[in-house]
Length: 598
Image (cartoon, rainbow, N blue to C red):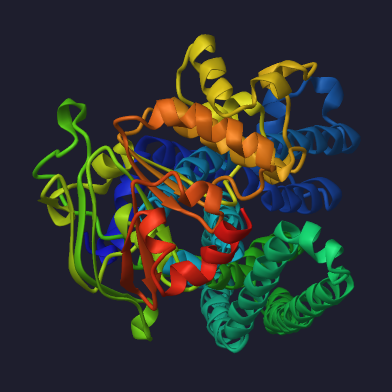
């Protein structure tokens, strides 16, 4: 799949908007009603001033006399009735504004949910290389902060923009009706003010981008520090790392401060331009009282409309800053959606059907990270079906890398990997991973119950759970807990010992009933007695299942039917423990002394 096709483009947004056409039409109709109710309010001023206070009765007073009882036909009655009308109109306008905002909120929440869902789907396809480069903090920022920025723009800013725009247009129309010269003045001044405001806004938009970058760096460091807080405290290094975190937070403060005050300054200067136009307009209006037939009441209405426009114009001037923030957030989201995806071949065959024992062949495989030194160099080995095979070697020899290639986390640069003589390029990794279970030295555990960490959301009966725990030598430990399988284990299983975490991962493997088992230092944290009991229990479970063991412990390695010794990404020795311990080479160096001592 081309990552470009995943991006949130204009056409994608238009498609999403079309899905909510009825809500948006309703929202705009409500906005029109709100404007129609609020815009006439200042027109009541000529009625009060000219017809009531200056005692120049006209059509407005006649209309009030037609609806009011005769006892109210007094200046006081007219004023209180007008006050009632104004309060009613303002309340009605605000009620419609709330309804309009509600419609936009519904649309924005739905669209941002679709965006967030699109990003979550992408997370399942991003290559591990990109995860390692990007960091979880940066991805968190995209899923939370950036989406919220766009949500605010659609749900709040756009809703206010429509109301403000209609209010300014409605005001201009009324002023054109009162006096075409005043209306024309407004129509000319506002676009000029908005033009210069955009120029000012474009000068500070890069600062928002810089602030977001600083925040992403801070978030990455925060996540890394929290994840490693136990080790940092054990090494007495938390002060240094927390100080670095403060430095990142301070950079966020500096960049946020620059954007905040400069964007505020740009907004103030923009509003100053509007106020200058406002004062010019007021001066022109007063001159027109002297040199035209504009009445005192009408000039009050004109001034009322000027104040009436202040808030909408401020909204229109400020929308550019919200737009720059939303645009920057959308770019960062699209940067995530364009990340390189994991290689996922289409499944042409299924070598695991009918629960066949799995035969694995690795032939002339090369691999390097980021085109640097080869980690695997022309590696060839055979893992016979139903047998236990061990990989041993010094750290950095390529053992863990080979595991990652087997489960498709990375793709080899050259050579081939076959399951039951079928190339991995012809098998989808969903099929492969469904039949392979990997138990790592540091298993991934969630801040949830033992049950959830054991089943990972799968549906298993209680008997199956306890049988898996029995194999993993955890049954007695968990049965003694007051909440049993519903015991919460904390972040990364912090409430469990290292050995208990490893045994829980082994129980999870047993529960998944795999055809191919990979144990990567899976018992390194266990004491000798527990490990011996576990190996004894696993022997029966692993019978007939192809097993790959990566370990440094002799107790784990000796179980293998066949052992490969890896050095610098190549197989340098092959044989059983008894054969290899007698040969000169790395294996004898690693285990010969232990064997002699034993």
